[in-house]
Length: 450
Picture 1 (cartoon, rainbow, N blue to C red):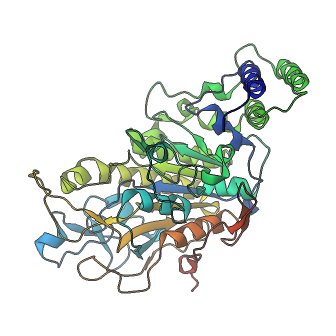
Picture 2 (picture 1 turned 45 degrees about the horizontal axis):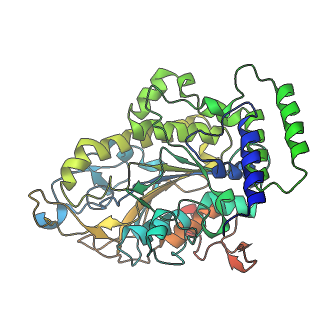
Picture 3 (picture 1 turned 60 degrees about the horizontal axis):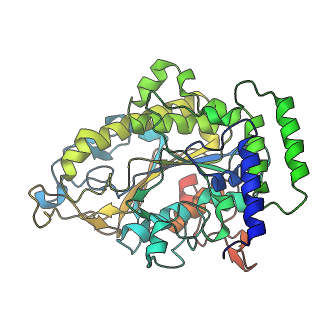
């Protein structure tokens, strides 16, 4: 609905005052996204979740669930290697993960019914189905009919006011042309609950988040003066006030600003994660956990990175698997050595897996694998997860689960559980209609139960 002229003037004035507070509002995120900086109280146990998203869908057969005895058209081109778990083998390009499997729980029976990227991505990022399928061009840009993502769900259920965001998404949003993939924001609960979006590569020498700190020459006393001036201007309703208040909290809290100062990390630590976007993204995720951010979504590539219809084995062995292997090893080593593993749940998954049978697309010469949601694998560690176990099993072709399966909704329930929220936590939408935050079941077997 279009604002009336008076509202336009108020909004313009508020934005202008906000930008004069002593620090820019822009840090790779738009003004409305600063609303979530005022969200969610500290969760019980101060636990955090890092969701490592293999966007596009990682092949289970060429990573965590190889089938070395299957025919060549199923098993693919890679050899396998043993892990530290007796009888459990991985793809040859994951040696560091294989040597650390005593720290991880591997689920080989993830499953759902939708092979499309959009609904499948929405499922893993929200733990819920898409309320409305995308249709119009407007929907394809950004749908506010999506279900809220985990950071937004936490922000809605437990507001906080300490200047630390409920969630951070990095190093970019999942966008393909004009299409923003679903499930990445506050959805129908509104932009004030969106996670903080970082749109810079933390591996870049130019990576800086200086706008999270006060501008040079601006003292906290001067900021207080400007805050009082702004309050005096708020004699009429100010629709941007929630964003202004959030920005002020961010500017007067150094926790998150410190986390983004990647130049303060010892060079040897940066090298351990890998000097690439995957590695430095997970290093930054660890630093954000240390700053108290409860929900971090770490996108491993752009939307099609793991979508290996063509050149599946070349793309996996030349970049995707080695970089992921090193980055996850660095993350796991640090979480354990720095005593953070018990309070940090790490989840590694794509929105689905890849087809058991190798295929070649029309007009292409290099084979690959297509979308496959019937069975795929996910890794879990930390926050009470019992490491060194393999849960679930797929058939001899890696096509279907032969044990009870788990859905993205169950993954979502487990994420909320780690954040201290029951899946059946009730929220209300903008029209005051009650609904459950999530309808999945906590994956109790991960924690040695069930």
